[in-house]
Each structure stands twice: as C-alpha cells, then as structure tokens.
Image 1 (cartoon, one colour):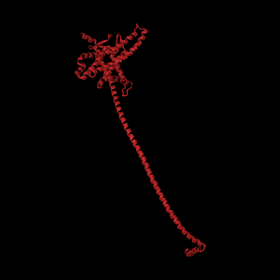
Image 2: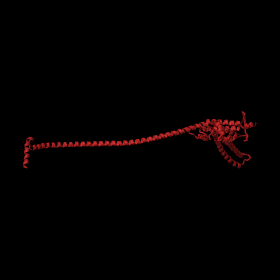
Image 3: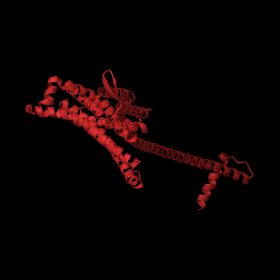
Image 4: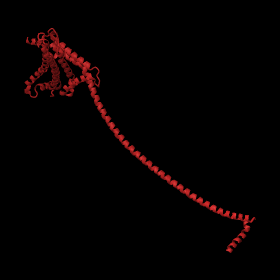
Length: 240
Length: 168
C-alpha cells in the first residue's frame, strides 16, 4: 500500500492517476464487452446473447434470492453493473499491469482500498436509502438499531460499521493479496540477479497456478460483494 | 490539523471519480445491455406463456374435434348399415312382387291356352263330322257314277242301313 503513486489536485480534491486510469479502463472493457455481446438481440438468442443473458440471469438470481420481486426488479441493473464491473476489475490486473517508472498506472482498480471503499459506501448508501424509503425514517432507525431488542443498540452500531469495513476490505484484501503475490513470484522469476534455470522451472508453474486461483478468487469476490449488497438491502428494509 | 491531514491523505477526488464513473457505467449499461436484454427477456417470457396458452387451447380444440369426428364416424357407420339394410329389404320386396306378378301372368297364359286348345279341339271335331258326311256322299256318288242328292237318297240309305241291321 505504500507503493509510489502519482496524484494531482483539482478543486481542492486529491485524484490518483492509477485509480482513475484503472477504473476508466475497467469501465471501458465492461462497456465494450456488453456492447459486443448485445449486437443482434432477438427473442431466439445466439451464442453471444446467450453469454450475456447468462450473466444477467446470474445477477438477477442473486438479488431475486434475497429481495421481493419488485425490489429485485429495481436493483437488477445495479447488481448487474456491480457484478460486471467488479469481476472485470478483479481479473484485469491479472492480465495487465502497466508501470511507468515506479508508478503502476494500470492494475486492478479493486486492489486499491479507495475504490473498494467507494463501492462499499455506494452499496451501503443504496441499502440505507432503500431502508428509509421502505420503512420511513423512524421505522428505518428502529429496524436498524433496535432490533431484535432495544438493548442491542451498541452491537447494532458496531455491526453497521463492521458491514462497511468487511464489505470493502474483503474485496480489497483478496484482490490486493492475489496481485501482490503474483508480482512477487513474477519478479523473482525475472529478477536479473537471481535468474537461473532452476528457479524459473519452479516459479513458472507456481505463477500459473496462482493466476488461475486468482481468477477464481476474483469471480468469487465479485459474487460475494453483490450478494452482500443484496443482504444489506434486505436487512435494512426490514425483511430478513 | 489532524483532521485536515487525514482528509488530505484520503483521495476524495478519486472516490468521487470512481462513484461518478460507476454511475455513468450503470447508465451506459442500462442503455446498451440491461434495458434491451430485460426487454428481450420479458418478450420471451410473454411469448412462452402465450405459446403455452395457445398450445393448451389448440390441444383442447383438437380433442373436441377428435371426439366430434368420432361421433360423426359412428353416425355415418350406423347410417351406412341402415342404408344397406333398407336397400336389401326393398330389393327383397321388389323381387317378391316381380316373382308373384310373373307367376300370376304365367297362370293366366296357361289357362287361356287351355281354353283355346279346347275350342280348337271342338271345332276340329265338328268340322270333321261334317266333312265325313260330305265325303261319304261324294264317294258314294262317285261310285254310282251318278249325281245323287243327299236328300233324295236319304230314304235309300236308311233302307240299306235297316237291311244291314235285319241280316244280322
């Protein structure tokens, strides 16, 4: 986390080039893939349409499993975008990392705690907003802090804070650790001083195995993030 | 002072950027993928349910039609049997009539022929009697080389006949 970064200031706010570029690239990939897969939509789906329909079905099922039918319909787009973005962001850094000097400009945006915290804040805001909308402000406070018993207030406050931390740091930790280990193994593989045949033979399969595992972890974490978002929305709007 | 350093160390701009990027992405996806796809999915669901309904009504119609046809077939079979039986009966009746007519006619022809034959026989017998008398006279006159009148010689003939009766 104490990697060198390139930042700039704009209207008093700090912007990080790595975050901006990586997020933009991930978004661009998402849009490109979605655009390519939805070229010729028809009631009778082709191969490409089947692929993206599978994805949409998957996210619809995630929210559909936790929310009422009308709510699931409302959050379908949110879950779809969230899953699509996070999974692309998670896997992106495994395929592509671009470094100029000491600064890595392109990597997984979700390997940056700032991005995962932003996503977590956004998801929780959606969940809290839905709670207020469904129960009214009083009902929302009561449901969030005084259920099942009023004396559980301190625990409930801790739970809400923990929700934010677990949601954001789980995603960040998994992706960051995966990429860091990948970088370590790759560096040792190509480390000029240490380069020798034996170490390459050992490191290459490790690198490949770890890449495969990270792909798997990336998909799981995207799924977990969306499912937890659904859980929080359901919890805060009172139906558990 | 501590507060400002913490705030400054948090790249709020990046967070804002990520948030806006995500919302933009959501909007673009809703236009490009989510909206059209959900549209298609709804269309498909509608189509499937309407197809199922259509199949159900079509099946019912087919069943109705089949039972109707079955009834019609049975009806037609019954009718055909009846027609054949009727035809047989009427043919029998007609043939009976024809046969009895023919036998009546034959009877009539037979009896008429008998009557005619009797009459012919009677005629023949009477004409033969007359002929015998005439022939006898003719033969006798030829034998006597003389014209004999039947009436003139009647007494002579009778005398001969009575002579013959006496000599016996």
